Length: 316
Image (tube, rainbow, N blue to C red; front, side, top):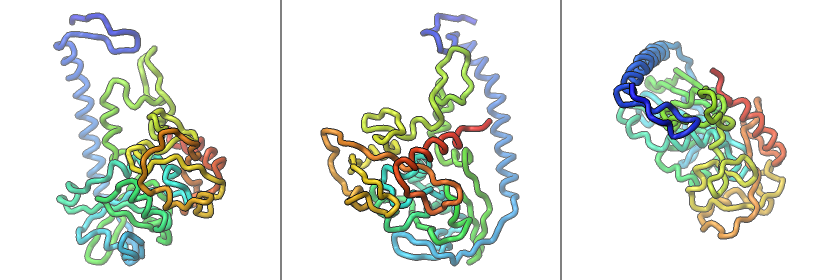
C-alpha cells in the first residue's frame, strides 16, 4: 500500500487505488448484508396484519370535500405523507421537518406506474393549506385537509402511512414516523455517502474530525443561506419560492391572522426586498395531544423548537 500525504488534519488517509479498492470491497460485504436485511424486513412488513378504516371519511382538497377512498385515484395502493400544521402561522412558521419530506415528494410518476397513488394530508384548515401549497409550488402531488378525520387518516401528523383498497373497502397496512420517514428523503442517503455525512453531532467520527452541528441544523436558514433557527429563518426550500418576504408579525397568530395581514397575503408573489426588514420567529412542531396545530406566540414557538429538536435527535 502506497500512502501519500493527507490534505490536512481531519481527513481520511490517502492511499493508492489498489489499497482503496481492497478497503471498498470489505465495506461492500457489510453493505450487501445491510441490503439483504432490509429486504427481509420489507418482506416482514408486507406480512403485517391490517386495520380497516372508513373510506367514506370526508377530506377536503382543491375540488372540495371528497371521500378518502378517492385519494387512491382508482389504484389499489396509496401512500400518504401526514404533514404537521401550525394553525394561523405564516408560511415560514410551518414545520421545517415536514418540509424536508414534502419537498422530496413532488413526483409520483414511478409510483403511479407501479399502481400506487401518493397524497399529502395535513390537519390545517383548507383555507390556510391551499395558499401554502400554492406558495410552495406543490402542484404535482395532491394535498388534502384531514382536520376533522379520525386517526389514522387524521389525528397525529409526521407519519408516512400506507393504505390498501379492495373495492370500496380501505385498510391501513403500514405506518412510520421519526427516522422512518427518511425513506422519502433521498438527500439523507446521498449525504450518508459523503465523507462528512450529515454534519450532525450524533454521527460517529474519527478522533480529531469535525464533530458536526445539532441534529437538523440545515433545515432552516436565513436569506443568505446561513443555518439558523432564529426569527430570520424559513424552512430552507422556501427561499427558492417567489414571495419569500420578510413579514413583520404581531402576537395574534392563534387567531389565524398575522396582525393586520392575513395568511393569504404572505403568499402573494413579489420580489425580494433589497433591504432586509425584520423577520418573524418560526412556528415549530405542535405539542403532543394537539393534532390541530399550536398557533400561539413566538415565545411558545421558540420553546417548542428547542424541545422538538431534542426529540428528533437520532437514536442508534
